[in-house]
Length: 356
Ligand code: UD1
View (spheres, protein in one colour):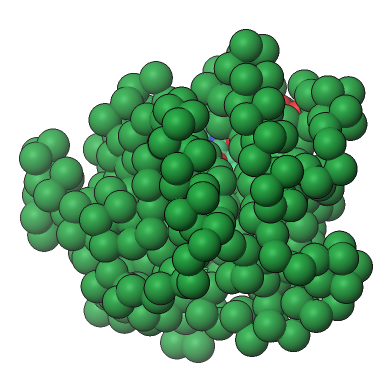
């Protein structure tokens, strides 16, 4: 069997790596196509080395643009590549523009599509990712879900049950595999950043960082919380591009740094007193690690991180943020039982199903 993987943005790489490895161990032919949606070394190259996956066979170098430009550009550059490579199936990951663009191309030329991390829904169509999820799932032939809510969503949307496979969470496969490496880098990182007790922030959603009034209010609240507990803030390029001048004026306890590599970021997540984020993947990773996660969004496509994990939806309720922050400050981490099939073997299950 020849499997072609499409990756494009940072969170894709951690999801594709274990699937690539599991298929390699079964001897399948594989092609890795990078769309180039993310292109900075710190957002892309670094992960291929750290995740032990080969360099992409092709890079479409699409770069940034409006949603329409980026999606269209991936489609027109991907079509000749997939036609030339003739895979038996194309695997797409998560919910980024690269995911839906590749799925659209394959569906029109009759190439089978597998969607890894299928079925997640925030029920908020103002999020570009929700549109990407809905469309990709409608087009996919095999839908691999990380949690049972995914199966329920898909069946409700009319997708045949026999196309849906509850396999668990591939992102957690990567976390489990690289936790020892995270533990190994932590002492050096701790010394470099002069860390004792600390919290961790990530913010990149357009709904949080694109609007001046929203972002500046959020930053003021975070700035004041950092007086109680130093907060490390590795800044996503989207946030940096818009707010670098303002971020320089934060108080020194709000530590603005460049994006980190995977083991380093994982180490910080594990040891942070609290994580404040608007990322999807971090809600899952912190649930697995038992680190309290305060999500600056009104909804989540990963409800299991709230019902079974450490995640609390804060939205823009600053009083709730403060309350939960102080609770976390005085708590010790309570590692809960991970959600079903978040066990490090999700990619193996996918490879097993594909091999049948
Ligand atoms: C994308 C995904 C989002 C995911 C996030 C993870 C979509 C619609 N969004 O958002 O779901 O959570 O990746 O990081 O696919 N930029 C750089 N260097 C890079 C990449 C981006 O400077 O390597 C800057 C560019 O100015 C670009 C902006 O960041 O315009 C946004 O990048 P883009 O890929 O459009 O969306 P993200 O916000 O990264």
